[in-house]
Length: 280
Image 1 (tube, rainbow, N blue to C red):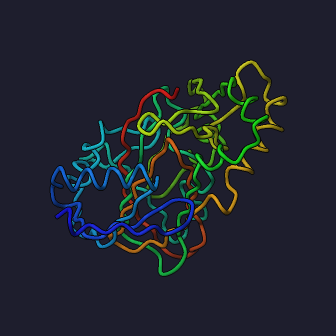
Image 2: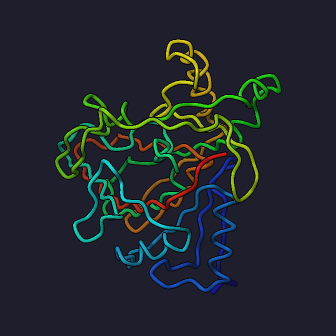
């Protein structure tokens, strides 16, 4: 199987489509190693035509990379608590994930990666953007790199999942819970990828509250600069979903943004999240 695998980059910054792989089948070690290397090289990888991917297959593929997360604030499928169903009905105005972020940075051990399977997609719109945070770090000046090297940031879910947070909004087909007292955790502003050794910026608008030892007011100007820098167009790729498509992205080195431009249409996705380790 491995000899038939084709890897085609979709942008200059990150992202690659992989052909010749069925995620409903157990991958050979050779095929898995090739997929794993593509994941590390391209930071987000895509598979088309995965119509036979069941929840069991979805979880089995995720477990090749690590243990699976059960989201603390979003209820999973009844028989598969590790699978989050991300559904937007035609009459709903807001979507889930509709802002730049990296998944689960509000945990002490944030997510390694997320695997999203498209079940039903709108006839247009609903694309997802990703941004390469290695590039975001590497393009900073030496002076700003030095300033950031000793900084730690405070991450929490209380903004997004608090009483007024977008992620905690009551949704017709998703059961979420508010987290006004969500814990805070410290992560380095510049993290080192545990598998490649590359440095990346590790702050995001959804879950980064402030710098450790700084007030929120003091933190805001520098955080806002970093947030704007991290989403520069040349750091990004964009994926057009089809039913059966799968995306697997590295939360240690990317941001992503689910576009909400398909009012009046339904979108149904299923997400498995692979547990990670504490950033360093």
